[in-house]
Structures are given as structure tokens and as C-alpha cells.
Length: 204
Image 1 (cartoon, rainbow, N blue to C red):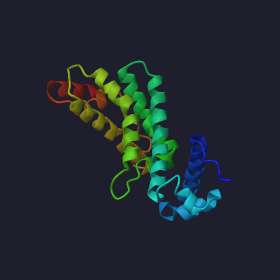
Image 2 (cartoon, rainbow, N blue to C red):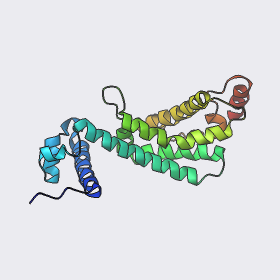
Image 3 (tube, rainbow, N blue to C red):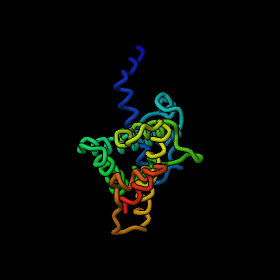
Image 4 (cartoon, rainbow, N blue to C red):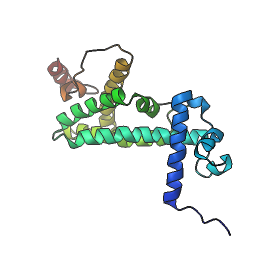
């Protein structure tokens, strides 16, 4: 009697089990030790069967990476929900971003893992979602009409500040030093002309 095909929910359970096994191997031995055969052995299935759920090793790692980015996204969304002004939102998002890097260091490194010099497209798409609260706050805050490209420049500048500070903390370069994540400092990035001078002066 032919075996009944798995439902989508059942397939999702298998994928999660395989992803969890891959994560254990990665944490204990490094990404280079993650193999389809090794994962299949961990979850008690054949390597050929596992190919039904993942195309290859890179597909599994990209799946794990998207999970890590989704965790970051959830933390940023929670920070946004607790803030009632764009200024407070930007400050809260910055604090949440650095807290994620501090408290979930493995997930943070995995979220930004570059394969052959580039983060997988699935992870990049998840990052776009994660940073949407920042885009919304910046768009609400700017006084003059700005193109989407200008808003994105400001977002990139603020994000770079968060990310750079998180890496400096992990490297032990800024122990005991707390950055200013308020809008006067953060919005300085990408602000041209008269507005930039006023904002920069106010930040000091």
C-alpha cells in the first residue's frame, strides 16, 4: 500500500527537526561540518529523503539564517510596539538591536553570515522586513518631503551605527560606554544642508 503523502504541516515539522539538527552541528563543529548525510543521521532518515525538504547544505544554512533574522525582526517589532513617537521608536530600536547582539550572539552572527561574500537572498528579504519599523519612524520624522532613496540613506546610516556599535561591543572595544540612540544623533546620518548642521549641533 502506497505511503500517504505528508501534509504541509507534517513537512514543516520535518524541516524544523532537520534545521535544529543542522544548528546543533554548526554550533558544535562549525558550518563546514554541516552535511546532508550528517543531518539525516541526526533526525533518523535517509539522505535521499532529506533532499525532499532541502535542496542542499546551502539551502539548510540559508533557512537557519532566515530564522535568526526573524528573531531579530521580532525583537525590533516588540521595541516598536512599546514606543509612541518616532524619536522614541528609533532609540528603542537601537537599544533592542544591540541587546539582540549581546544576548543572542550566536543568532546575531548567523543572521549576518555571508556565503561567498554575500548574505543569501532569503536572509536579505527578511532583513528588509526587520528594518521596516526604522523606515517607518524615519519617514514620519523627516520635516521636508524626501524621496525613498533619501529615506533609505538615512536608514542605512542609522543601521550602520547600530551594527558597528554592536560589533565593537563584541570585540570589547567600548566596554562601559553607552551610545546615544536618540533621533538627534541618529538622524544626523544623511541629513544634508541647513538641517544637517542644526541636527549635528543639537546632538553634541
